[in-house]
Length: 439
Image (tube, rainbow, N blue to C red; front, side, top):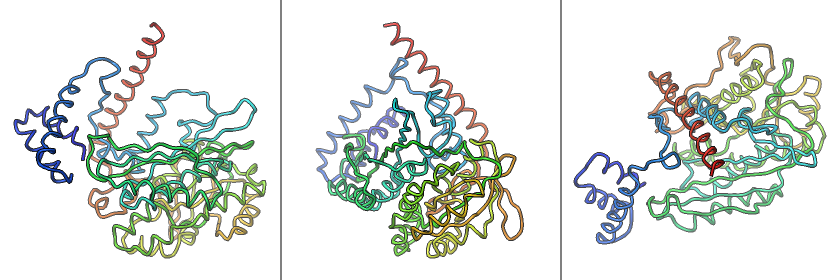
């Protein structure tokens, strides 16, 4: 619970009993005495008043009037993709080989020696806060995948862990154990990181969040913009990671979690790198952001091509235990993270690629091709259908089903507000840079 935010809302609304109400909220969450809770409420209100109406470019926030939840940010659908495009605009031109404008899995710069340096960071799944080992395992795997799909073997990882004020310190150790389980299995060390409380004294409760980053160095590179008309699309088997684990946990199908505990993706990528076939591959990605629907949209936009898929071939590659769970819950498997490897390459190399992947005991098949045009389509039961991602990824928990995945009626108006906020942030950045230069 964000007690600072609670206090500021009360002050803005001129609520006369804000101290009493905040004290009661603190006692609901925190194991403390009424006297200590009231002192904490009073101190929080004092700090909130001091920062309620700040002035000046550096201190005044950029406001869009649209909340993260309303626009689906982080929910791996249209709203999330649109926001990431705006993030790229705020960052601006970087001179990097691959940056946020490419919507790729990692960023890439060229070192002085001519080698590519690949850098990525992945946030842990927000619903795995109570399962810190599982959260660590899956976020570490995700970060390593994002480096591998750029055509590089990762060489190191870093972690960032934030636990709220009332969280048990053991969560940190459990989370690190999950990360380093992947580290020891893959031979890629976790070498540094940061451990903090969420919001310091201002966030009470037990919530945990964090991220794992990874770095790689390579002489070759694969990126989405290299996708070409005539390429074939291959996909490996997938059993999911954080998303599938979350589904299994919150629908009481806990046995399915075990299906996600593997490093098959990493082993398959290792085989590819050692085979030398990566230099013939145009693009690779992990099936995560909004499922294959989301990945197809991002690749199409970045490379200026159209992707067409065969659903019957994709279905065969989904772990049967996972697929049974998703279908029993009426969750579209094409719109959730399967943690499969997607490879786009010229057709003449497809057989060699598949043979190499299968030598790692990982199944793989051709699931589609790249054609002229934009967007993507899928053939299901002989019928060609549009493959556009929804506003949010497939609803895979009870609360997500309640919220739904349809576009909000005022989506276009929200986009305009977000456009304006991004432009305001860009202008603010320009003013601050000028101020510093003129000091």
